Length: 228
Image (cartoon, rainbow, N blue to C red):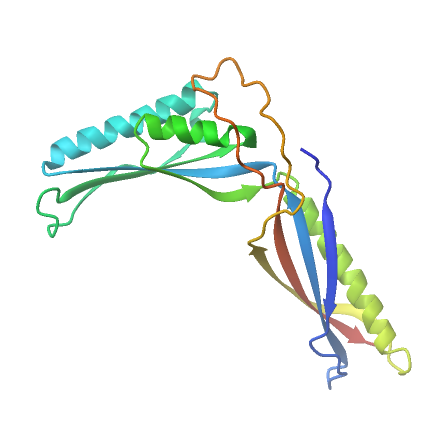
């Protein structure tokens, strides 16, 4: 996967007034596109029935089958986050009042295998499968770069606004951030054939349909500079 980081910069000024404390405040918005390096999958296992013991047994067997499938296909124990199974009762359901629930969360680093994992997991007893988040191991360094760009941009903008004034831009007084993920799709989606599956996989391969190249987050910085 191409690891190129695309950063689009937008500047919006909330306020630019010299206050009694001799400061200037600006708002800098970064839109950061982060390559999808891995996805986090959330699997739910649910079982219904009239006998709580039988429901617990069947639910646990399905949970065990899902966990065993994942471990056979390369995931270690530490790679899996497993919520203990819970039994609850909903007596308005007269025929099947008892319910078993458990959730397994894990990362898929080869996104071409998402659909293969989904079908195999549902096949051994998983009730639902969804991608809950996207990730990149370099995300922290991407944010660090966004911080530096925001500070430099805000300082340049402040100096321009004060070019005809006696005051000059001093040290940073305060800085705040607000990070939000944007739901979007990539216009330049890839259309590649699936690479050969790992021969150790105990799953029938499924042609991948996942096409998301990156996830997008907006980082809004509120930066206040002292005035000299």
